[in-house]
Amino acid sequence: MAIKELRINHVLLGDDDWDKLMQACEELGYNKSSILKNALQAYFKRYRDFYVKAGIADAQARGITSSEHFLILRDRSEEDLPTYLKSLPLFGQSPIDTIPPIPMEERYRRKYNTIELSRYNYVLLRVGHIVHRDSYPQMIGRMVRTHLIDNWESAYLPQIERDAKEDYE
Image 1 (cartoon, one colour):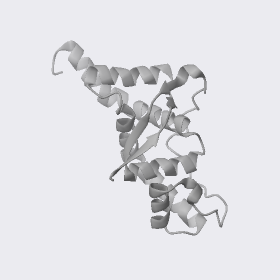
Image 2 (tube, rainbow, N blue to C red):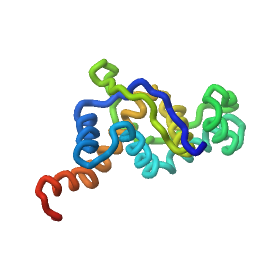
Image 3 (tube, rainbow, N blue to C red):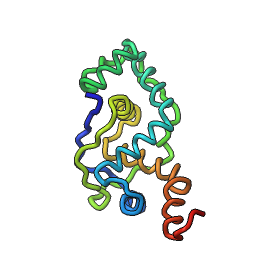
Image 4 (cartoon, rainbow, N blue to C red):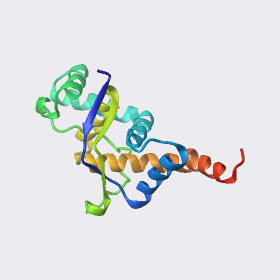
């Protein structure tokens, strides 16, 4: 199967970011059930190299090949990875390091069910979990926030504004 599902009860997102996602759904035709998938796909397209290098470094520190590492993360669980032979690798500045954690308050918990990803992006997400050492709801929220910071003004907002003006420019 080319698709992997991550079951998740909620993601942590601030009001402004959640409102932007809902506005993209309402005004641009994105599907609410897959908006996070779209944001994560774009995030990993932009920051793929960081997570690929991190996955390779993590595999080396565990004494396995990058292919073995990839297959374990794709088909099994993080707990099935061998323990580190060396100290935890230094992954460097990550794309979400500048995004402060989202408060774990109930009001920021955006209910969700499953996020379907390609197997490749699923593995990158699991590498992210190793790198960031954070819960999936927190990490995904920070990744989506980064995506919106990177793309809202240049990709989403112009479409919304032009539609509101009812003009091409």
